[in-house]
Length: 129
Image (cartoon, rainbow, N blue to C red; front, top):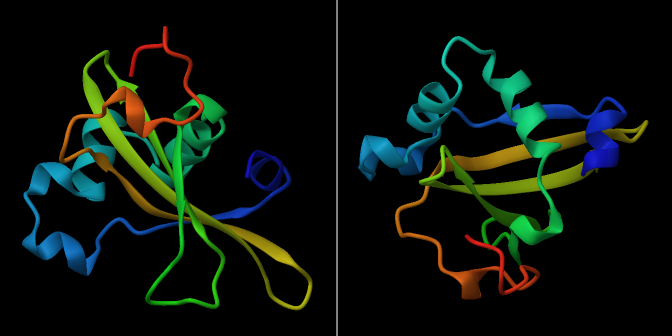
């Protein structure tokens, strides 16, 4: 993902999603991004934030049930402001005839449930969530 972003991958961000219609606004992409990065271009802010992810932030890989032929999605978690758990779900794909790389950011929102250490398989025990 970092290689793709550093080499011009297009960032696609779902600021408004149908699933958010039934969700508490605090747990939506739009609310989270506007709260954490006010007055910033959301795509530029996400590009910067995705480049800071580390293997310790990795939670799991999930298959897209709705689109099984598309690449798998990766889930990450990060803490912002020392207290705000943020759930991040992305998919990196090579698309188009010339291999245009795209990073889809499906989720970047405050976590509905607090993170726990066992959610992070590559985090060392002494690291805080």
